[in-house]
Image (cartoon, rainbow, N blue to C red):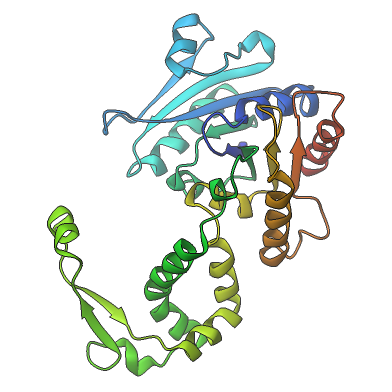
Length: 300
């Protein structure tokens, strides 16, 4: 039987370790829990898994809140990875845990690296973020979202034409409907890029695309800043409002996130996905709601 894995991801210093502790101590207190922390390699080539014993040197190396095995972790490992080999490094870290306990429950903690999301088929996903101080921390500005959507549509057009029949297939070859664009001279010199092909997509085609299932999905996701894309895939999303005084825009941000989740996730109305509050304060109702949700999710 494979390990049970739970990925906790989100922006740096958003409270991921706090949520990991909460799950280990309040939800899975009767079960050994292993912790695998992922750390991007600063040298660009190191891929290694290291067993941590909670010593001061290990804690300083992580530059994070220290958690000792005596406080509830069955084991602690750090996996240093590079994006091109993360698909190998995460399974290697989990094999190290499996050698200690064949059916162990493992919390994988990572920052918002997009490569992490697709590097392993995690059983559960949790997204943790600090309370935003500006809407733009979470959501793109309208113009930036429109530009990003246009870029995504260029990459998606051939797929959408073949699968959904949304674009004229005759416009996808190297003749009609395709224009070659040169980037601005300064950017071309910096990137060494060649002229790129872009499809001529009409306004009617755009509207047709946005009414399709894949169009709704892309248009909704593109509103988010890249670091917050995992939010819509999470089984539980947590806004940690205990790190600082919440800004006045918190309610607006929560409303926009809830609307986005309901549009993308058809199960969002049947079960709670988003929680916000001081998750370090047992007097905060959000604390107990979150514990209850995790127990339901993990069938505890």
